[in-house]
Amino acid sequence: MVFAISFFSTSAGCQERTLTPYEFGVLVRENGCESAEQVAMRQPDQDLYLAIMYDLGLCRKQDNAQALAHYLQSAKRGNDESMYSVFLGIAKKGSPEHPQTDEEIQLAQHWLVKAGEKNNWRAAHVLQLCYEVGCWGLPIDLDKSKHYKAVMEKYGPNQSFNRDAQQQASPAVGTR
Image 1 (tube, one colour):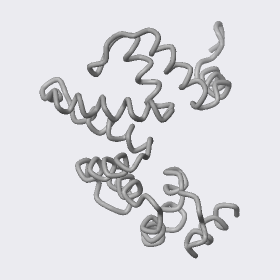
Image 2: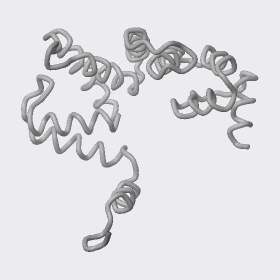
Image 3: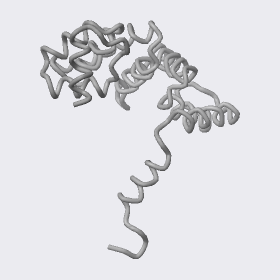
Image 4: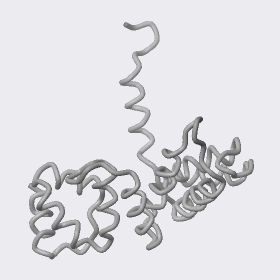
């Protein structure tokens, strides 16, 4: 019911906040592609929603290159989730047979750090690990690692939720 009200106010052009990617996915599932595309085109950051559509194959043929291009446009406008998604898109392109070029590594690092600076918890998690062990061209820096761990803990998902999920996934010792 709440989502239906949100959808109709959005489709009437009354919504002032941007839909989250999750809400957009629900919109596609509940109301179909035509409604979702109309709503996406009225959002302030259309490239984010086009990127999601291409990335996940929602209402469009899945296309990593198109997704990356739209995430990059959104990232340039300051969207931290898109910044992190640019990093992921570049990371997904590499393989042992075809490693990333130095230019791709620098671009991935640039957007990863920018997302982390905007307190994106996913980027902070990667940065915390990279500054701890050295990866993506970042040097080991334990002070930065601690900083990004604090960012991740502050802005990331609820830690007690994660512990509960882990406990449910693995039975207690001695039980089967």
